[in-house]
Image (cartoon, rainbow, N blue to C red; front, side):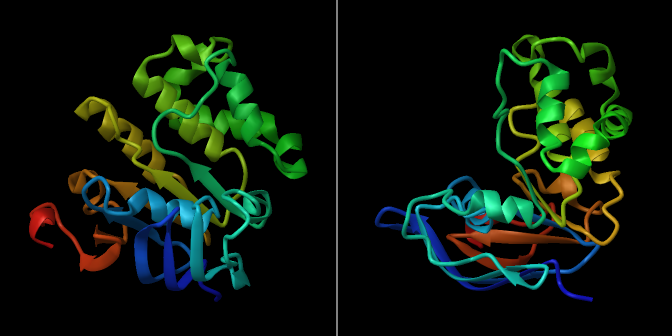
Length: 235
């Protein structure tokens, strides 16, 4: 079976700044992989590079055997819509939501493919099974929600279509510990079948024992598997 994601010799950055350095990574069908590390060491940039959102990059990125890497020289995001249509779902760091839209409108916006749009009612029901607090808030503008509820909306929107690779960036960022745990448990309970999930996170304990691998990232390079006792500062 073809690997979901194969990265070979990836370097990426913004303007003159190089953040990712000759990185290699393979994620197989059905895998959940966590990437952990301190802020500023390249976790978000790696996810952005996969989605074609960095200022520049070089190297190979293959999604289900199809090259999506290219050389970014025309500005970030030029080919992102094509990558998304090839099976990428992005759940960005922070809320990244529109305060004036309702919860339901946000979820509907995630059903951007014709198949997902036709099936959006059933898909929303699945999201509400994962994030039950949203059931009573469907007509509420997201600007009136708590931080945890907004995060549920953002993740739920990313789950509204059938993706081959789910990119999740810092799902626990800014949330209280109990809320972080409930959000992560709901996210990891999703049946991804032969797709894959790649989660960037600072809190190793939220991932440990719940994903197939936890990889440490330091200074733009992958440094092997990490655990809750791992010392990022000495990596």
